[in-house]
Amino acid sequence: MLVLDTAEDKPDDTNVYAQLNRTAPYREDELAWLRGQVGGDKHFASAPFRVVAMHQGDWGWLPDNGAAWTALANEAGIDLVIAGHDHAFSYQPPDKAHAYHRLILGQDQLARIDATGRMLTVKVTSDKGVALHTFTIPSRR
Image (tube, rainbow, N blue to C red; front, top):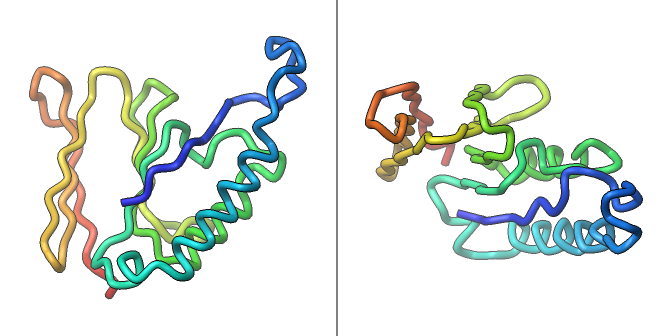
């Protein structure tokens, strides 16, 4: 599992930041780091599943709307991206633009992920234990 910092949800020049934010260069460095992880880490290469956890879905605010991040995730064979931030449940299976499952957890929701060498099973429940959504991801490796 890789954990990413999606920084802020607005551009650096947004008034509320009083011109103090400099997340754009930080995010460029983070993307370079991610390229190194998916391109050269032996543990990543041999992992039966590749999961990314981050605060904001769709890679956070980026000038290109996360296109470079999505392309890298697709190329790297990411299986699942888990995020929050939106405070509402959302699940999207792979599609033409995203080769991976996308899960956004809302407030008071939990995801339990059980893994075998061949299957990830994701069960989303409320904090009261009420089942909300379950899906499985077969290994692509």
